[in-house]
Length: 195
Image 1 (cartoon, rainbow, N blue to C red):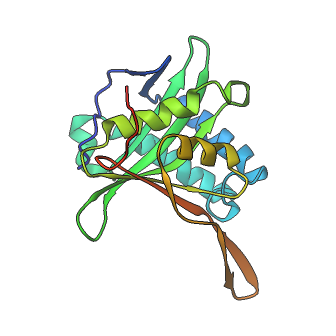
Image 2 (image 1 turned 120 degrees about the horizontal axis):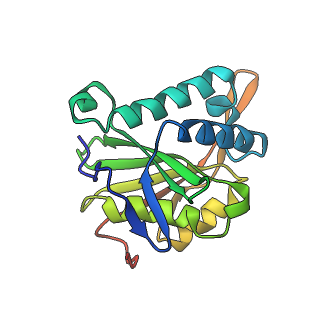
């Protein structure tokens, strides 16, 4: 089980509050990811189909239900958090916790979205810093980015992530699959000043 905080207490990161997502935030995340697929920010293979959207919505719901102590063991270790104002959700992120072959904890930012009116306002940074701040010592925080996610790549670089590999193409049968770039950050190894 992940060692990051799963409490329902909000964490203040810079000027935005990162809080656990609520059921109404699922629609926000799924709709932002769907529009991001159209702009090339997410893989069409992994997020572009109706079936993939339903699976994403179910993962978000499981993350919300997984916060309940009695239900925690039934679900995979996933966390869904958002930044919201008094009126609406500004951004959200879904992360998965796992361990690599060496037993090291890995926190994978599967998707991070920010409502278009609030981009370049620190919302995405608040979400990423939330996971970096709460990552246990020695954990790896990773993220995968398509070539069109230039803003996210700049943010990751700014926060001390290192690109492990660039985008590359894999030929599969008659088709081609674009493999996203891989960005990593290791707690205890980064010089990132965290709040």
